[in-house]
Image 1 (cartoon, helix red, strand yellow):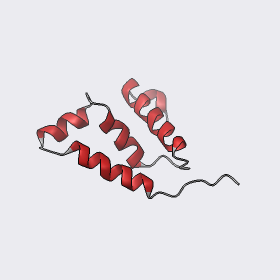
Image 2 (cartoon, rainbow, N blue to C red):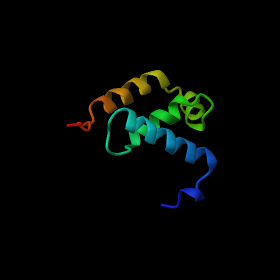
Image 3 (spheres, rainbow, N blue to C red):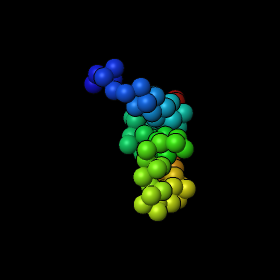
Length: 77
């Protein structure tokens, strides 16, 4: 993947998703990591689209958090 070809915003989102995955001791960056990062950005296009579609952003964030909680974690033996 040539990350330098992505927009600066997408590069930042991917870096934040990676940080989230590392913080939660996940060995992969899953779509849920990226989605949660994008939802947490209040001015994101995703939030705007969800609001226009009468989507419940807070509920979606809770469900994604639950999905992340259910992912396997790395054990440090």
